[in-house]
Image (cartoon, rainbow over all chains, first blue to last red; front, side, top):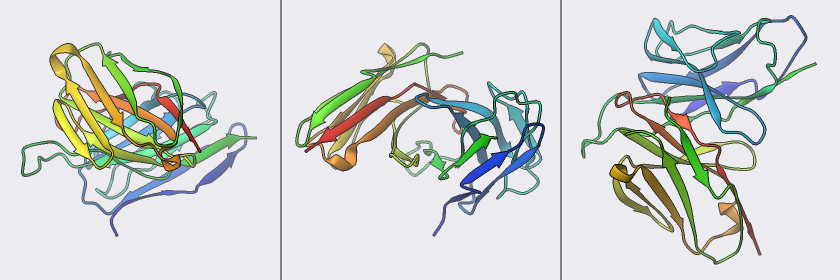
Amino acid sequence: DGGITQSPKYLFRKEGQNVTLSCEQNLNHDAMYWYRQDPGQGLRLIYYSQIVNDFQKGDIAEGYSVSREKKESFPLTVTSAQKNPTAFYLCASTSEGRDREGEGYGYTFGSGTRLTVV
Amino acid sequence: GIQVEQSPPDLILQEGANSTLRCNFSDSVNNLQWFHQNPWGQLINLFYIPSGTKQNGRLSATTVATERYSLLYISSSQTTDSGVYFCAVGNTGTASKLTFGTGTRLQVTL
């Protein structure tokens, strides 16, 4: 079955440590996104990529880095520069095209990674 | 950037009741999506609806783009409808980056 796989589901980070969250999709989607969700809040965009080897900063990119070396993969690194990294991280993807009715496609989300600083 | 406001923030319904959730946005959009987040955090896309009306079972949605709002209707609610409903909008192309509202938390009781 096609979908998005995020790993790990739970991650604990020590102060000053970099950690990398994995996001893999087998939907052949062009665009991929990383969002952060804090308790009781909506989602905020960290980074997005619409094509391999290219990515753009979102609204809260400071302290994060990404790469897009393969269409299927969009890993997110939470660096020690991110002062408050405890949050729920969600990866999403979508197709750039249009369906038969000329409409765009909705997002597909992974199941998320809960990151906690200890 | 574009602002997205959702109302009400919280809603408690008895099973079988109907409800309407509202999403207001501050600028023109070419991408509007509704999502349901279950208690385990999984987000499911309900509708892609930058304009017009769509229906899927007990759920339907209407977006009036010229007046900058969208409505999500839930009929004959079930306990499995509980969770948080998010509206998200974009205005930078087909696969645009989305700006999310803060959501409506729905609890359906027996």
